[in-house]
Amino acid sequence: MSLASVLRLVLLAAIWGGSFLFMRLTANSLGPAMLIEGRVFAAALFLLLISLYLGRTLLFTSHLKHFFIIGAFNTAFPFLMFAYAAQTLNASTLAILNSTAPLFGAVIASLWQKEPLKLKAGLGLLVGILGVSVLVGQQLMALGEEGLLAILACLFAAFMYGVSANYTKVAPVVAPFENAHGSLWAAVIIVLPLLPFMPIRDPITLPISLSVLALGIACTGLAYLLYFRLVKDDGPASALSVTFLVPLFGILWGRLFLGEAIGLNTLLGALLVITGTILVTGFSFKKALKKH
Image (tube, rainbow, N blue to C red; front, side, top):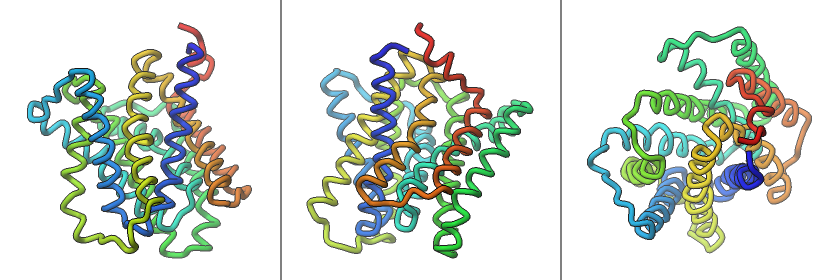
């Protein structure tokens, strides 16, 4: 990786780690549906402005089914699950559970794509499961059934990310920017009918509005541009390393801005989940940092 790519990688991890902070700040006031509708709508508008500036036309109806599949499994439903969980769980826990997505992706690939799990990957799954157990055990005792539902929602979101990652291997070939842009508009349409069933609880204040805009423009729209630039410049394997950095920033932002306690279970759980993900994906920091 070049220095510019490393800086983009760290910035992307910091932004995505911050998304859990903003969800934690807004989920209880707006409810999951309004929060995510605001997020994806702001992101879609941001990418629309970028596309107009670049002179790129989105052929939305040409890939309608594809955009709705990506919009559902990679954006709308996972975002809703994390927004629901953010009403209960702290930002650091949300970020760590999010990083289990590659673990689910490996299991789904072994079933769907008939890719056998190697011994190293199997060990990684066990380590990742142990990490999740260490992370959530204390919270389950403290939060009870409400905490259990929130944790399951996060894991289901990670599962859907795994489905989406495997779908892209057989999906129509669409340019990365158009993939992001089209799937966001599909997510806007998917979430819209849910608004009457998950009403806003509190008045929309300026801090809440700014948090939603930050989620949409920075944590979604800008983050997608950074991610796809990394994929283009350094390949998907190197870009995958952002998965290991996001929990670190999620823990850091939660501590700095929300005063969340960093317990031994949080640090150990994060370490085990990240280690398991590295083993499952076969990721090599040495290869990722090797200059092209």
